Image 1 (cartoon, one colour):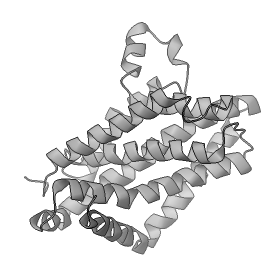
Image 2 (cartoon, helix red, strand yellow):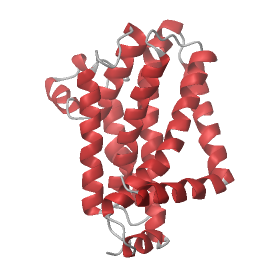
Image 3 (cartoon, helix red, strand yellow):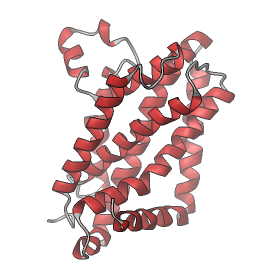
Image 4 (tube, helix red, strand yellow):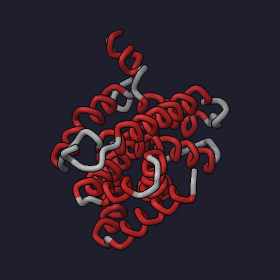
Length: 244
Protein backbone atom coordinates (compact mmCIF):
# COMPACT_ATOMS: atom_id res chain seq x y z
CA UNK A 1 0.00 0.00 0.00
CA UNK A 2 1.24 3.47 -0.88
CA UNK A 3 1.22 6.59 1.24
CA UNK A 4 -1.79 7.77 -0.77
CA UNK A 5 -3.79 4.85 0.60
CA UNK A 6 -3.09 5.93 4.18
CA UNK A 7 -3.86 9.56 3.29
CA UNK A 8 -7.30 8.55 2.01
CA UNK A 9 -7.85 6.37 5.08
CA UNK A 10 -6.94 9.26 7.37
CA UNK A 11 -9.40 11.55 5.61
CA UNK A 12 -12.20 8.98 5.91
CA UNK A 13 -11.57 8.46 9.63
CA UNK A 14 -11.37 12.19 10.29
CA UNK A 15 -14.66 12.73 8.49
CA UNK A 16 -16.44 10.05 10.52
CA UNK A 17 -15.00 11.20 13.84
CA UNK A 18 -16.35 14.69 13.22
CA UNK A 19 -19.88 13.27 12.86
CA UNK A 20 -20.79 12.93 16.56
CA UNK A 21 -24.23 11.53 15.88
CA UNK A 22 -22.77 8.70 13.80
CA UNK A 23 -20.19 7.91 16.48
CA UNK A 24 -22.93 7.82 19.13
CA UNK A 25 -24.97 5.41 17.03
CA UNK A 26 -21.90 3.25 16.44
CA UNK A 27 -21.68 2.75 20.21
CA UNK A 28 -25.34 2.65 21.21
CA UNK A 29 -26.79 0.38 18.52
CA UNK A 30 -24.48 -2.61 19.24
CA UNK A 31 -25.26 -2.35 22.97
CA UNK A 32 -29.00 -2.33 22.31
CA UNK A 33 -28.80 -5.36 20.01
CA UNK A 34 -26.55 -7.29 22.40
CA UNK A 35 -28.95 -6.53 25.27
CA UNK A 36 -31.92 -7.78 23.26
CA UNK A 37 -30.07 -11.00 22.46
CA UNK A 38 -29.17 -11.50 26.13
CA UNK A 39 -32.72 -10.94 27.36
CA UNK A 40 -34.52 -12.89 24.64
CA UNK A 41 -32.54 -16.14 24.94
CA UNK A 42 -34.11 -18.11 27.82
CA UNK A 43 -31.24 -20.48 28.73
CA UNK A 44 -27.60 -19.72 29.47
CA UNK A 45 -26.37 -22.75 27.53
CA UNK A 46 -28.36 -21.64 24.49
CA UNK A 47 -26.93 -18.13 24.79
CA UNK A 48 -23.39 -19.51 24.89
CA UNK A 49 -24.09 -21.42 21.67
CA UNK A 50 -25.84 -18.59 19.84
CA UNK A 51 -23.56 -15.71 20.93
CA UNK A 52 -20.56 -16.58 18.69
CA UNK A 53 -22.80 -16.80 15.62
CA UNK A 54 -24.46 -13.50 16.55
CA UNK A 55 -21.03 -11.88 16.76
CA UNK A 56 -20.14 -13.03 13.24
CA UNK A 57 -23.50 -11.91 11.84
CA UNK A 58 -23.31 -8.46 13.43
CA UNK A 59 -19.73 -7.94 12.25
CA UNK A 60 -20.85 -8.62 8.69
CA UNK A 61 -24.02 -6.54 8.98
CA UNK A 62 -22.51 -3.43 10.60
CA UNK A 63 -19.39 -3.48 8.44
CA UNK A 64 -21.43 -3.88 5.26
CA UNK A 65 -23.96 -1.16 6.10
CA UNK A 66 -21.48 1.40 7.43
CA UNK A 67 -19.09 1.03 4.51
CA UNK A 68 -21.67 0.72 1.76
CA UNK A 69 -23.63 3.82 2.67
CA UNK A 70 -20.51 5.87 3.41
CA UNK A 71 -18.83 5.02 0.10
CA UNK A 72 -22.08 5.72 -1.74
CA UNK A 73 -22.23 9.13 -0.05
CA UNK A 74 -18.67 9.79 -1.19
CA UNK A 75 -19.83 9.24 -4.76
CA UNK A 76 -23.02 11.30 -4.55
CA UNK A 77 -21.17 14.23 -2.97
CA UNK A 78 -18.49 14.20 -5.67
CA UNK A 79 -15.65 13.33 -3.28
CA UNK A 80 -14.86 10.09 -5.07
CA UNK A 81 -14.77 11.85 -8.45
CA UNK A 82 -12.22 14.35 -7.14
CA UNK A 83 -10.13 11.54 -5.70
CA UNK A 84 -10.09 9.60 -8.96
CA UNK A 85 -9.18 12.75 -10.88
CA UNK A 86 -6.03 13.02 -8.74
CA UNK A 87 -2.93 10.84 -9.33
CA UNK A 88 -4.15 7.86 -7.30
CA UNK A 89 -5.00 4.36 -8.45
CA UNK A 90 -8.35 2.69 -7.96
CA UNK A 91 -6.68 0.23 -5.61
CA UNK A 92 -5.37 3.15 -3.53
CA UNK A 93 -8.91 4.49 -3.25
CA UNK A 94 -10.48 1.16 -2.31
CA UNK A 95 -7.62 0.33 0.08
CA UNK A 96 -7.98 3.74 1.71
CA UNK A 97 -11.68 3.20 2.24
CA UNK A 98 -10.96 -0.24 3.67
CA UNK A 99 -8.44 1.08 6.20
CA UNK A 100 -10.62 4.09 6.98
CA UNK A 101 -13.89 2.28 7.68
CA UNK A 102 -12.46 -0.89 9.21
CA UNK A 103 -11.63 0.63 12.65
CA UNK A 104 -15.23 1.77 13.09
CA UNK A 105 -16.64 -1.60 12.07
CA UNK A 106 -14.26 -3.26 14.52
CA UNK A 107 -15.22 -0.79 17.25
CA UNK A 108 -18.78 -2.05 17.07
CA UNK A 109 -17.53 -5.62 17.05
CA UNK A 110 -15.44 -5.10 20.19
CA UNK A 111 -18.31 -3.38 21.97
CA UNK A 112 -20.61 -6.33 21.31
CA UNK A 113 -17.97 -8.92 22.19
CA UNK A 114 -16.93 -7.42 25.51
CA UNK A 115 -20.53 -6.68 26.45
CA UNK A 116 -21.50 -10.30 25.80
CA UNK A 117 -18.51 -11.66 27.69
CA UNK A 118 -18.42 -9.37 30.72
CA UNK A 119 -22.09 -8.37 31.06
CA UNK A 120 -23.96 -11.36 29.67
CA UNK A 121 -21.26 -13.79 30.91
CA UNK A 122 -20.90 -15.64 27.60
CA UNK A 123 -18.12 -18.19 27.90
CA UNK A 124 -15.15 -18.58 25.57
CA UNK A 125 -12.24 -21.06 25.66
CA UNK A 126 -9.81 -19.73 23.08
CA UNK A 127 -7.24 -17.03 23.74
CA UNK A 128 -8.85 -13.62 23.51
CA UNK A 129 -6.37 -12.15 21.03
CA UNK A 130 -6.97 -14.98 18.57
CA UNK A 131 -10.73 -14.43 18.71
CA UNK A 132 -10.20 -10.73 18.05
CA UNK A 133 -7.90 -11.48 15.09
CA UNK A 134 -10.58 -13.71 13.58
CA UNK A 135 -13.15 -10.95 14.09
CA UNK A 136 -10.82 -8.58 12.25
CA UNK A 137 -10.74 -11.00 9.31
CA UNK A 138 -14.55 -11.12 9.19
CA UNK A 139 -14.64 -7.33 9.47
CA UNK A 140 -12.28 -6.90 6.54
CA UNK A 141 -14.55 -9.07 4.42
CA UNK A 142 -17.60 -7.07 5.50
CA UNK A 143 -15.97 -3.75 4.58
CA UNK A 144 -14.88 -5.11 1.19
CA UNK A 145 -18.39 -6.45 0.56
CA UNK A 146 -19.96 -3.09 1.41
CA UNK A 147 -17.52 -1.25 -0.83
CA UNK A 148 -18.19 -3.59 -3.74
CA UNK A 149 -22.00 -3.49 -3.43
CA UNK A 150 -22.03 0.31 -3.18
CA UNK A 151 -20.79 0.44 -6.78
CA UNK A 152 -24.19 -0.83 -7.97
CA UNK A 153 -26.38 1.55 -5.95
CA UNK A 154 -27.40 5.05 -7.05
CA UNK A 155 -28.85 6.14 -3.69
CA UNK A 156 -29.01 5.06 -0.06
CA UNK A 157 -32.39 3.38 -0.51
CA UNK A 158 -30.95 1.09 -3.16
CA UNK A 159 -27.98 0.35 -0.91
CA UNK A 160 -30.27 -0.72 1.91
CA UNK A 161 -32.05 -3.09 -0.48
CA UNK A 162 -28.85 -5.12 -0.69
CA UNK A 163 -29.43 -6.20 2.93
CA UNK A 164 -32.28 -8.63 2.12
CA UNK A 165 -30.46 -9.62 -1.06
CA UNK A 166 -26.93 -10.14 0.28
CA UNK A 167 -27.05 -10.30 4.10
CA UNK A 168 -30.31 -12.05 5.06
CA UNK A 169 -29.74 -15.19 2.94
CA UNK A 170 -26.41 -15.64 4.68
CA UNK A 171 -28.04 -15.19 8.10
CA UNK A 172 -30.57 -17.94 7.38
CA UNK A 173 -28.06 -20.34 5.84
CA UNK A 174 -24.93 -19.81 8.01
CA UNK A 175 -26.01 -21.97 10.94
CA UNK A 176 -27.17 -19.19 13.26
CA UNK A 177 -30.76 -20.39 13.54
CA UNK A 178 -30.30 -24.10 12.88
CA UNK A 179 -27.37 -26.38 11.96
CA UNK A 180 -26.37 -26.35 8.32
CA UNK A 181 -26.27 -30.15 8.36
CA UNK A 182 -30.02 -30.27 9.00
CA UNK A 183 -30.88 -28.23 5.91
CA UNK A 184 -31.84 -29.76 2.55
CA UNK A 185 -28.88 -30.83 0.47
CA UNK A 186 -29.25 -27.99 -2.05
CA UNK A 187 -29.21 -25.40 0.76
CA UNK A 188 -26.12 -27.03 2.27
CA UNK A 189 -24.49 -26.68 -1.13
CA UNK A 190 -25.39 -22.98 -1.27
CA UNK A 191 -24.13 -22.44 2.29
CA UNK A 192 -20.67 -23.65 1.26
CA UNK A 193 -20.29 -20.58 -0.97
CA UNK A 194 -21.34 -18.04 1.68
CA UNK A 195 -18.55 -16.36 3.69
CA UNK A 196 -20.71 -15.99 6.80
CA UNK A 197 -20.94 -19.79 7.04
CA UNK A 198 -17.18 -19.94 7.54
CA UNK A 199 -17.28 -16.98 9.91
CA UNK A 200 -19.85 -18.69 12.13
CA UNK A 201 -18.08 -22.07 12.01
CA UNK A 202 -14.73 -20.50 12.82
CA UNK A 203 -15.77 -18.32 15.73
CA UNK A 204 -17.87 -21.12 17.25
CA UNK A 205 -14.91 -23.48 17.04
CA UNK A 206 -12.78 -20.94 18.89
CA UNK A 207 -15.21 -19.79 21.57
CA UNK A 208 -16.96 -23.09 22.28
CA UNK A 209 -14.24 -25.68 21.65
CA UNK A 210 -11.01 -23.76 22.29
CA UNK A 211 -9.55 -24.18 18.80
CA UNK A 212 -6.97 -21.64 17.66
CA UNK A 213 -6.36 -19.91 14.33
CA UNK A 214 -4.26 -22.79 13.03
CA UNK A 215 -7.04 -25.27 13.77
CA UNK A 216 -9.52 -23.25 11.72
CA UNK A 217 -7.10 -22.56 8.87
CA UNK A 218 -9.74 -23.50 6.28
CA UNK A 219 -12.18 -20.87 7.57
CA UNK A 220 -9.45 -18.22 7.80
CA UNK A 221 -8.25 -18.96 4.27
CA UNK A 222 -11.74 -18.82 2.75
CA UNK A 223 -12.56 -15.51 4.46
CA UNK A 224 -9.26 -13.94 3.38
CA UNK A 225 -9.73 -15.13 -0.19
CA UNK A 226 -13.25 -13.71 -0.17
CA UNK A 227 -11.99 -10.33 1.09
CA UNK A 228 -9.14 -10.12 -1.43
CA UNK A 229 -11.43 -11.08 -4.31
CA UNK A 230 -13.99 -8.43 -3.38
CA UNK A 231 -11.26 -5.83 -2.90
CA UNK A 232 -10.03 -6.45 -6.44
CA UNK A 233 -13.57 -6.45 -7.86
CA UNK A 234 -14.39 -3.20 -6.06
CA UNK A 235 -11.28 -1.57 -7.51
CA UNK A 236 -12.07 -2.77 -11.03
CA UNK A 237 -15.73 -1.71 -10.97
CA UNK A 238 -15.32 1.52 -9.01
CA UNK A 239 -17.20 4.43 -10.56
CA UNK A 240 -16.79 8.15 -10.02
CA UNK A 241 -20.42 9.15 -9.81
CA UNK A 242 -23.90 7.66 -9.58
CA UNK A 243 -24.65 8.32 -13.22
CA UNK A 244 -21.44 6.98 -14.77
